[in-house]
Amino acid sequence: MNDARRFGLCGGCAHAQTLDSKTGSRFLFCLRARQDPRYAKYPPVPVFACPGFEPRPAREGGTAG
Image (cartoon, rainbow, N blue to C red; front, top):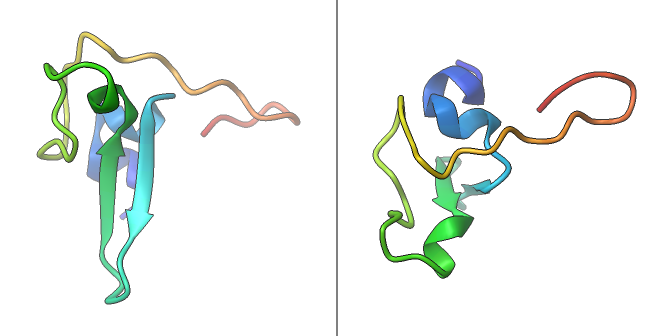
């Protein structure tokens, strides 16, 4: 399953960072949580609504995410 479906809204958010464990698990870290306690560091996924969502900028070449 791709990250966009697995993580929901966070899969395309500019403030989300994926972290891979040594065992091969992938976790999502919310960068907004560093400055704002209203956001969970590791939100339960998939996320369907978030007031802090901002789309990740499109990469060069016209593809997103």
